[in-house]
Image (tube, rainbow, N blue to C red; front, top):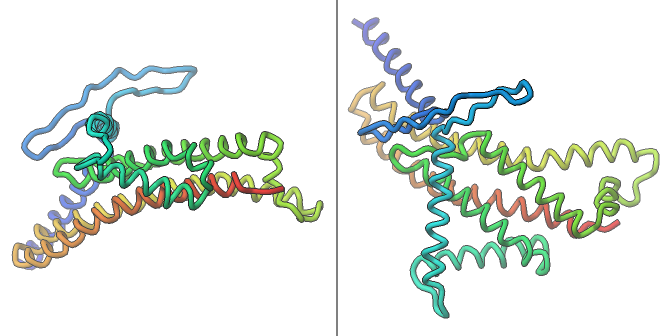
Length: 276
């Protein structure tokens, strides 16, 4: 009897594990619970010997949903802009002013903040929307996919270097690879270290966002899965912890969008204000 119970618990554990992996991995269908949406598949092709598959996955689908919601929000807010914005317009304006005044100006100065606030605000709202979509029933968090966070980090990398070149010129941008006051015989080592640092910053942005979003969903799903593994007797405990983690996930969604934005702004500011 004990062996049968253990075997049943093991089987249930495997099913819960498969459920968690199905939720956090990519696929070609969106599971809404009551129905499944099969996304259109596109026949793969090759370009210069490289296999290319342009099929829409659920991660891409929810990125498109996030983009659509942001465009819709912008259109709605634009129509309600006035001397005294109200409702959603007031909420969006508050966040944009926060990004401009408390993030961009504090890390890169007034002049640079005016230039790069649109990019920083777009990054913040896109990441926040992607983070929140995964909390909805049947939703998927695009930022829980390392390819998405790598793409965001790559855009941040090019924006950082673009800002540096625009401010310092090509010569000054190359000069920042060699910190002032360093002995000539350390130059080769310092140049290698600085180049590695250039790529380490976006890599850290990529992994930090990806890991935090995946970890939150795994914890919530694991707590829900405990109900099926250990029985309904622990439902109050798991539901309580699950609700707490759900609220925490809302905070993490906002926090990670903020962290990605402020670190990008900080990296731009460090390069813009570098002196040689």
